[in-house]
Image 1 (cartoon, rainbow, N blue to C red):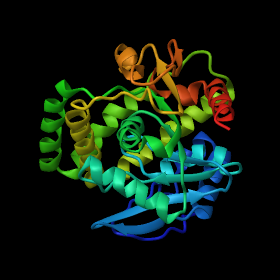
Image 2: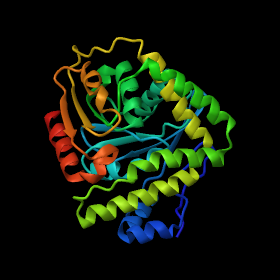
Image 3: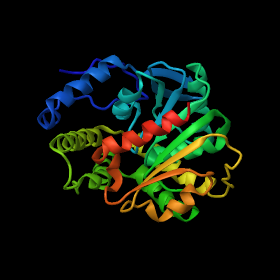
Image 4: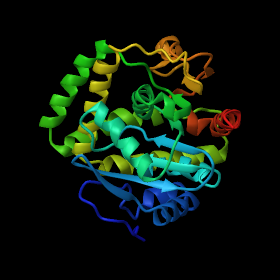
Length: 307
């Protein structure tokens, strides 16, 4: 069974598959994934020479803006969209085309304006939380609340390594780049927490299979784009003052004590006035999967506080 998908040269839509590995991990979750894809077509828009795509779903008095993780696009946020579209207007853009931070933020605003969305609540994690910080800094008046997870503040000392990475990515063949990125990002799935329930283990196995398929398909252009944006953000935003003491919204920050961003938590949270911070002890980078009930419960309470 193949997905019925809109074809657009500028976009990639994981997963173009009839995957036995996903079915073996969880047939029920596979069928849910297929149903989501078939019922949530991408919207396309031209903006300043960029060919942008996004998912717009749901309805409600409040809107949630979702930023996906590394190597992803709008569809890789399908579980988050599914959780909130019954109560909120949800917008999930693909961060796969931009070549500057300012264009990125202007493009997101263009999408929101096109969908007649005013203020938003941002939900993000990992690479998406880098995008969220960049967007939020330039559009604080348009954000009522922001959720950041397992990320870090902009660090100028990392710019050199990302610059070298971008140069290398542009030279290497796509097949090799996919293998390198997959090897790096799939390490997050290596240590399965011992306290998972059978259902959580099934979900964990399914998501790992999902990302294995994703890394077989992600275009070189997307990997280069997201690496370039990370480089530009570390360089540009580390040089600006981040002080949101006059902002009237609320911030929620998740972190795992054994994740790479944890040493920067204090600096990460510093620009916000009285942010809600929740630290998980040993859940690593994928705490939203391994502690889904607690994680989502904290977010639900946070969302209620914004009403």
